[in-house]
Image 1 (cartoon, rainbow, N blue to C red):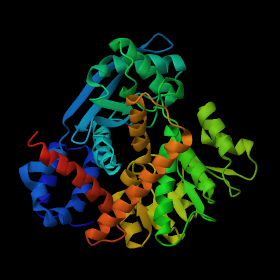
Image 2: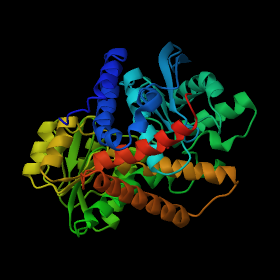
Image 3: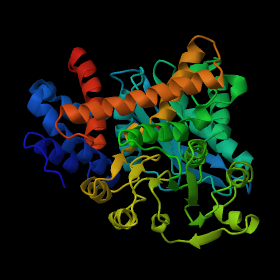
Length: 448
Ligand code: GLU
């Protein structure tokens, strides 16, 4: 474990004390503060006016009741959240997650990560996150719609294209964004396209937004591999998850000449040595909203492993793209023994701190989520830009912007790591490069 700077330790202690029990939030804060010692040594002014303490405290946290009626006529109650973490660089921006594991600590960790991720894109977006402990699994379209309408009935008063702009995350895709946008429009009597991103193409969505997080992560890892004269060509890759991020990660790896042999969902994983049949995965997940185990019934030569760890499958490149803390120290040990050369996080904080440490000690190239998965939110900012100018770009134009942004994030993280004396440490590079941008804006604005 990196030792934390003595000036920063009391700040961390205070965050620990004031947010007791919020495990994931504390993990995210600790990781960032571990990176900041070198910054404070060089620029002590960044610690002035309790700037770091202020960054660790959300500007506003909204928690609300979400009542709705299920198909059986029963009243259900869920809890809604929106944490508006930091608006120094632009309106709060970040997704909504609908998953039974959601609580205030999860939303705060995601919101905190989002601040630095969004800063790294170089685009004018602050950091926020929201969601609910609502479980969409097995719910009808009507139930999803009524839930989304009830959720927005409270949330709308806190949003606005210049205030706070949500998007999707786990459990929130194009269908949910449509219902949320419809209800926002109805409540406000305003066609304010830029208030939500991830919209459908016919009502103000951006081309390539759906593909952006996965494609972006692959662009980042490809650039990272290039620093060692390598690429995806001929590499075996494992991508955990089978949602939006995983699907488009697999698609881009294939385009770059790699072979993805395994993917998963929360019940288990599939292995297909011939290379995952992506059309089949899309059919199962995007159209049927089914489980990944259905794959093996439709594709011979593949097999399904229930429970177990997908990281037992030997590969050259691992891209955890499911959820937080899905890749443990034990998994990292297995991947290293099996010869992994690069790890790129498509999900938010999927590797535990111990896993990250093991990868770095073993000399495995490691791309942290807040840099590698920034392509999704970057393309959301491009969607906002198109909405503001009432324009609609082509797929090629949008993907070109995305690729350029990802290369720029990679290069900035690499250059920052080098500048601070730890070349190749993308964790430090991302934390510091993101922090400096936010810190400078906050300093300019005084104590707010
Ligand atoms: N939920 C995504 C993320 O983790 C996207 C957020 C957005 O597009 O606003 O960055």
